[in-house]
Amino acid sequence: MRRPLPRLAAALVLLFFDKLEIMNQDVVLILMQVLALIMAFCVHECAHAWTAWRLGDPTAKMLGRVTLNPIKHLDPFGSVLMPLVALVYHWPLLGWAKPTPVTPRNFKNYRRDDIIVTIAGPISNLLLATAALILLLIIKHVISGGRVAVLTAMAVAMHFPVSTENLPALFPLALLFYYIILINLLLFVFNLVPFPPLDGSRILRHFLPYGALQVYDRMGVFALWIFMFLAGGFIFRTFLYPLQSTFDRILAML
Image 1 (cartoon, rainbow, N blue to C red):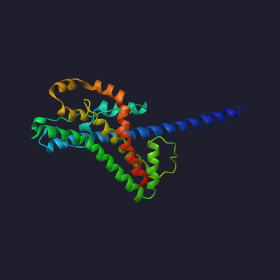
Image 2: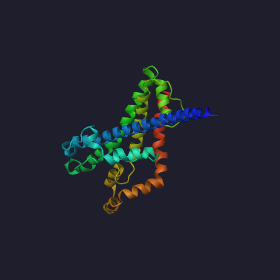
Image 3: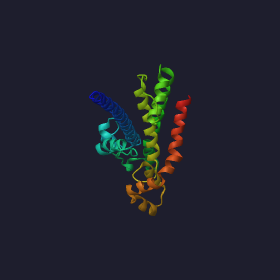
Image 4: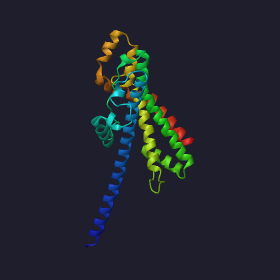
């Protein structure tokens, strides 16, 4: 009568370690997404700073922002804590970095140069996603086991049921690169939404008449969240998902 107890205890121990293994996998996936997000933030803000410097505004350069050093760009709350909380609780991936300081009066052509500096951030995210795509294609076609690593990474990132046993050693790197694609495409589209404080708003304000501009500048971040709540699904369906699908088709079919 006492024999079932050790068996039950053994079963509970095995179940505990199975759950622990799943939890560890989830932690690894979360940390990899945060790492990809931090990289995206650094590239984005460095692109703003470098472009402003090249166009005649040394403000960000003097503050040490023309760098990929995360310490110079990251906001501890917005760049690390908020994304971690969002990923753990399966919320939308929220976060922000420290804004790059720009003094537009230093530009030779105020409107043109300010637009170029603004668009440099989202464009850098698109270029980073493209670079990650190229690296994944190289892994897929040049390195032994690369095809399995890349396709499994895509499946894991998209939460498809797939076995992760006996995967090639390059699988973690392939997964990181794929997260870099997903997160940078998201930032590219999201930052072009024309509501403060996003980059898209800074571009749009150059084309508004004075009266409309006064109202627009007073909208604040609250209007952004209302807009995303009402129209965020439309924005992502129209712009993000087709762009992501294009990257996925290239990666899966080439």
